[in-house]
Amino acid sequence: MFSKACEYGIRASVYIAVQSMDGRRVNLQDISAEINSPEAFTAKILQTLVKNEIIQSLKGPKGGFSIESDKSMEIFLSQIVRAIDGDSIYKGCGLGLKECSEKFPCPVHEKFKKVREDLRKMLESTSLMHLAKELKKGNTFLTSSRISKPKAEMLSRNKN
Image 1 (tube, rainbow, N blue to C red):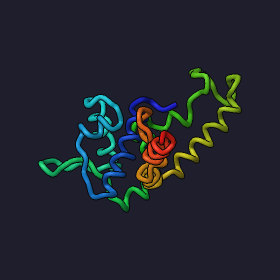
Image 2 (image 1 turned 135 degrees about the vertical axis):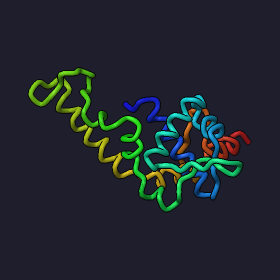
Image 3 (image 1 turned 180 degrees about the vertical axis):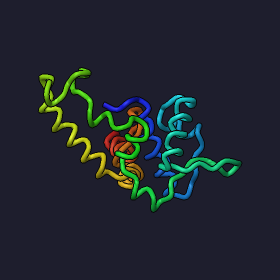
């Protein structure tokens, strides 16, 4: 549904927000490793996020990427998606047809219209702070190869 760049942009933003909650800036290498994305690709995505004022970048020995804690409550997923993918996700055809419209609908046009609207509502109502808090609590994770802390503890208890 989202481009790979957008997926990485969301993951990077959430990771940076979590680190920023603890007053830490993170470097490109750490972000890239955490979200399992190539460094050069991650760098371009981060540039886009900085340009769109979603994250901040500070150069130098104590530099890195961060998000002001109070600002992460005001940043919604829709802003990240718009910065990286534009608004095509709200307009595209469910089957990928170029000529799909109200006048000439594809077979899934009406049903997909509802999906797009629900997606828009979710993206516009989900803040970066909310996602960062869930990640920090261990209720969610950023990579499929990781087990969240509570699940890891539960697994180790079950082995004993």
